[in-house]
Length: 212
Image (tube, rainbow, N blue to C red; front, side, top):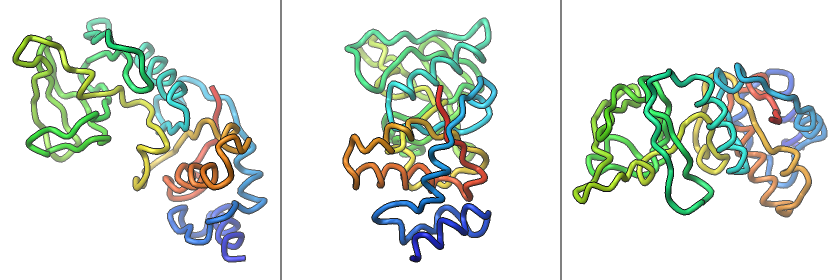
């Protein structure tokens, strides 16, 4: 079938992962075998590769591990004190820290879910860049309330959902594939999530199926 042919081409390094028009029902046997070959990652893998997860608890665990490992001694801890939820967590600010936009600012230089890097910061303002635009924003509002966690998330891992539409350069660690393969979500939802995760890279050579 076209789906199996496309999968086999990708497994052999031909074509790109973004050309998956035929994968609407189920992946080929070859792709399933690839997805079942998971390996445990080390901290270097987490730091140097892009991390994509289905479960937010996995995303948060990766963010915590990487932040604690790479943060300098003078990093500024922005503690999350709100109600527990799937998204927010303690975040360390330092030059070069990676963040994900949790909102779109009024100037629209950045958009929600975009990855940015910290250029500079203090205890009330942050300067960020996406490699094209650079801008500074206050994270203390007019009433003196810290709204950092309304605006930013740690950026060392992202969810499959938030990565939709992205083409990622370099190597990608994909997590929670075993959960998706279990069929717990139901066939169509699982297939859609697996398709989204595997199609972020240019080839299966760039994809690593991982577990913590």
